Length: 85
Image (tube, rainbow, N blue to C red; front, side):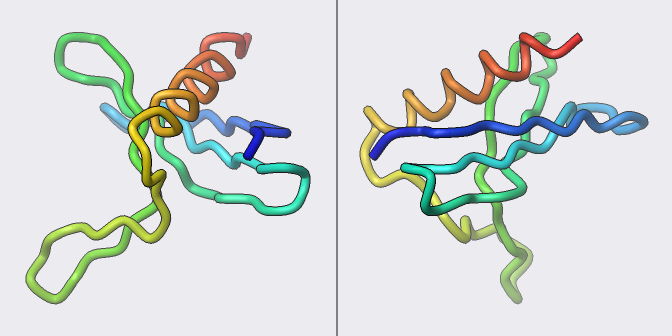
């Protein structure tokens, strides 16, 4: 599965949330609302789209199964974010 498109929407006025990403795969499937979040130390990571369960915990709606693909997705989204003006 190849990442065919990444679109980044910056978020202003939120402390740690920096952007939302939409990522298309093989020009056939898209995942919206992947979050770009800043750590307290100033680093960045992505969080997959999630929902709040009745007990208050967050559960991913969609997520990579393998660590290799998670790393490729994270690298691609963070690279696209860093290339914004």
